[in-house]
Amino acid sequence: MLAGAPFPLTLGAMFSDWAYSSTYQIQWLNFSDWLIAGSLVFAVPALLWSLFGLLVRQGTGKLFILMLAAAVFVNFLNALTHAKDAYATMPAGLILSVIGAVVTLFTGWIGLSGYRRGRAA
Image (cartoon, rainbow, N blue to C red):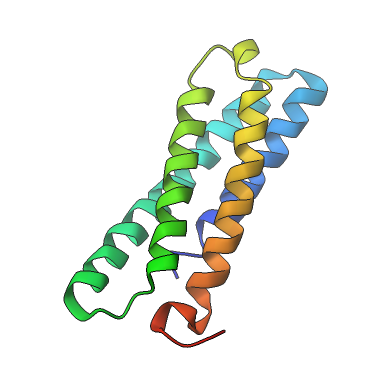
């Protein structure tokens, strides 16, 4: 369940970055900051739990862990990018939000399918 939670938050961050790039209302960046932080709140424990599962019972798929680590990395870079001044955030913030949304989509898809347990989806 933790693997699917970051996707809607990252998607919301992508849309709020898009709204900021269209309107330049700084509040959209504040929304994006909180949504990215929320996605990390769910993604980091999911990564730690998956690594624990890989070490203990060899049941978690390596592709899932790799995708989850990539999602955490991209969202962390996105959080650092959004920590800048509002005008310095674009276009890198929007690009990282789009990449983060795509990566978390595939991570949630793999995590909620049977692939992570060694079965084909």
